[in-house]
Image (cartoon, rainbow, N blue to C red; front, top):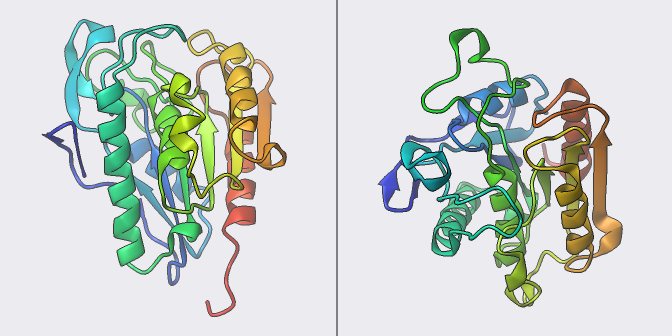
Length: 258
């Protein structure tokens, strides 16, 4: 996969235990890679589901003093009113749509593909400390909301009908472009699981709840589930992963010819 004209390695993949008839494409956050999330999904894998965790390309990030790190697009600030990298967001979204297209070519129809993302932060710069490198629940000292943000934006703007979206600790980017940007979306009836910790100091809980309300104005509000995790900071937890597994099981059930 490639983004912003910069190369990135092939995605980390957790293959299905039997014939893959569904797929989850899950996006990491700033400074991270797909490996940690591949490991997390291996722990909750569903036999007929393939998990694809792409790696963002490396690029300078304005928020972190232009230091280069894995990033789906540039980020200028963490407030809802901060300027956004519109061209970078759209380019990254097109790359995710291309990844969906590739899975369709591999034999998995788009309505059996679930898109997701999480703002798993990382140390600035470089890799997590050795003791934390394989801990998907650990929060580090830098932050972004890219993986979940990009998954929401892509699901609303793609012409590919999807099984649903898992959006963790994030908000909707380029929100002022909606509802026009999603006017012809085939995903207005898709299921969305949005999760947020009520102790998140980096992407405050109110931003997540406001995003859920915005989403209700764009797609069928009865299909949106917003879950709150008491005391959870800008991170994930085992309870959240169980909820994600149940959501995937419901949206991507086995099919009769498996």
